[in-house]
Each structure stands twice: as structure tokens, then as C-alpha cells.
Length: 548
Image (cartoon, rainbow, N blue to C red):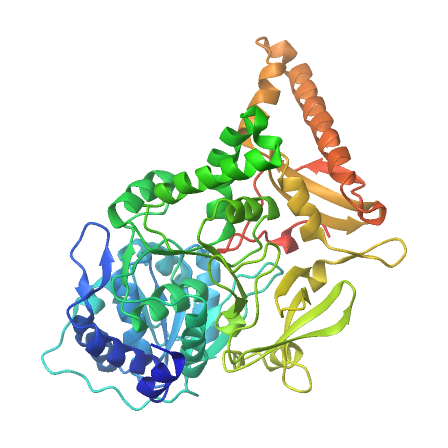
């Protein structure tokens, strides 16, 4: 069905409209399920959502009140989200990874009237509320609320596209969380527009592995899926390799939404090492053929039925993308932010160009501010752009230009086809010795291609360009094994030798990387980062925690 048809059927473009349309068009089909359990059907969703609304209304919650949702991915989460937003209240999804202190701060800042919480998150919520001085919110069990079907259905009030639907507190990579205000119209307009990239249909199966409290998964993996009649399955445990592989076999998903780290680990950890052992792999004609064969095996690993593998939330490593393109893997790249509900630009499988995320979505405008040969700040205008930051007028003003465009803070370029390429963050750009623009993300991509490297972070300082490098565990084990000692008296000497071996390895990588960089952007020094970097839920390194 085309976007104009959806526009006509969706009426006022609210999440209540999505629920109404989906339940009537796909009645009897499976909608949401936990792996290994019977699914909740589309025609069951309205009564479940009304049950949540009725329970909240009985506690005094009304239109405009904020209701937090804290829980793992499961059908109850989606039902609660639909129930809260359809009754005119404002959902405040909170990531389960947030520490108790941050959860408490969000609840207080948002002024939440009630909290829908899973049993696993009860203890964290209790700790979050312990120090709270203002009125305590009502605590409601998430699973019980979503299972409640009241005798008399609760009538949903009239909700409009301009009404606030959610406040999403981002963890960010640069500091304090901000409450992003998205309206019903922001979310629904973006979901409808994404159909030019990801057109789902009844019979499609999604395996959800990203947190629903993040707008990327919530908009594309839940709302877009329901709007188009797909079936979504959730895991009953964290998506570790041991949990994910059997789930892929059981579900055989046709659509998946992931962050780059998921596919980078698979390609760099399992696929490329095997290919690189083949003597002729470095010869391009043979390498391309082997990549194509490896792509068939990779599709089989993901269940054998994938037709869309969406990658977003952070930048995909160039070497991994080149492999996926040559492997004819059905990957698609998207670019967006929480503030844009979330997608700004992208394109579907087999229409991607390596290094580019693709053109802006229909109805979304993109421009580059102060653009030069190296690009400019990406600015966005469209129906998907947030209303602003909750209770933060100063940062809201800073986020928009005088003529109403949203400042993303990202640097990009546009090619002749209108394809957008992301260069990095404006605030992380390093000014070279003669005023050149140095993009840390591009240097990090080169460093991370080195086999011993797990991840890296590049920043500028008085010494020039510095790279913090975290090595893979197996690399550190190999270095330690070479200088292993048995006597306690020799331990100090052994540690010193291990550090020397690591320093020598880093220096070799530094020289190799610098040979591939322009003189002005070469890395002055490499430093060992002993522990993995702290990351956001979309696996971006929290840069503000490290030297700048």
C-alpha cells in the first residue's frame, strides 16, 4: 500500500490510529510474541491497550500526564506503550541500562504520575525512588497491566497529531540526558515515510534485539511493523550469541533492525578471519567470489530468510560495509537521531552506495550549513522533527536555527544523487596544524580494521592527534603468554615485558595507519585503553568520559 493510501486510512496520524488500523486490517494474524510462547493477535491488541488505559485512569492518570515504562523487550512493553499514548497520556520510555540514579532523575524531571515496571526492574526502581523528595508515582506491574482486559472497554479520548506522545531521555555521547519531545504526528509521519526504504507486509517476521525504549527500535521495529501487519518476536533474555543463534533458527526472521556492532562482531570475528586464511583472498577477482559465497553462509546464519537487514544508530565500519556489499547481503543503512523520530535518510538493500546512507526520506529536507569541500553541518526540517527538549527552553533554542531547521551536530556531504555521507560529529572535529579539518571517526575506522584492535577513540590534544586503543582479549592473552613467568619474584619483570610488547604492537599499527592518512591527520601517539570504552545503548562510545 502506498503512503497516500496510509495517509488516508490513518486519519489524524496518531498512534491510536495505528492501533485501530492494524487491528482491523490484520485481525487474526500474530502481532507480538515472546520466543517460544503463543503470540498476541492483532485483534487482541485494542482490548489489551484499553486495559492498560483503564488501569491508569483508575489511578487518576489522564491526558497529558507522564507515565514511565521501564522493562525488557516483551509484548507487554508494546501494549503498554500503545495504551499510554492512545489515552492521551505521555509515555516516558526508560532504558533498563540506566543506573538507578539516572532513572530517579528522569522520573523527577518528567514529573511521572505513574510507572509501569517489569518484575526484573523493580529493585532498580525502588533504589531510584529512595531519595526522591517529591510525590511518589504510582507503581504498576507492567506484565499484569498488559494482561488486564476490563469488562467494559475504556473509550480512548480524542488525540491529535500535534499532541505530545513520548518524552525520550537520551543517554547521548557528550553528557547530560535531554528529554526529547515527540508528537504523535512526528512518529507516525516518520514511520509512513520509512516505507520507501522498508516496506513490510503481513507474513514478515521480525526478531527484536534492540531496546524498545530507544526510538530506533520503537519506531521501526514496533510501530512500523504493526502498521504493516508483521509479526514481532522478543527474546526472554539478553541477546547474547548463545541466546541469539537458536532464536534465529526458530524465528527465521525476514527483517532485522540492528546497530553496527552486531554485524561487525560477526563479520570481523567469524567471517573475515576464515577468508583471510585463503591464500588467494587478496586477489580481487577471487576475493569478490569468496565474499559472495561467504554472504550466502552469513544469510544462513541469520535464519536464511532475511530480505532486509537495517543498520543504524552509529556509523558502520567501512571494511565491514565493503564486505556486505560484495557479499550481496541485504543490508540497508539509515541515518537519524532521536530528535527526528528517528530516520532522516537511507535507502533499501542493493541500492546502497558504500560510504553513503542514501537520500533524505520523502517529506524530509536536508541541508548542509557552512559547507565547504569537506562538508558542513547536517540540518533537518520536516514533520518528523521533535517539538523540543522537555522543560529546557535554552537547549531547545540552541537546537534550531533562526529559520526553523534542526541542527544535528553531525557533519556530512551530499553527492550528485542527493546521497548523504556522514563525516562525524561537529564537536569532535580536530583542527589540524594549518587549519585542516580532521575527522576522528575516519581515523578510528582505519585503526579498527587492524586485526588485534577491538575499538578505538581518537582526539586532539597539545601533542597532536592521540588514539586510545582497546585490544581484543585474545590479543592481550597472546602478549601475556609470550612473557609468562612462574615465580612471584619475576612478576614485575613479566608485567613490564607485557607492556613493552603491547607498546611495540601499538606502534606497528600506528605506522601502518599513518601510511594511509594525509600528513596533517596522522596520529602522533597510540595509548593502550585497558578496559572497553563505556557506550550508549546504540553502542556509541561516550566520548565525554575520555580525554579531549
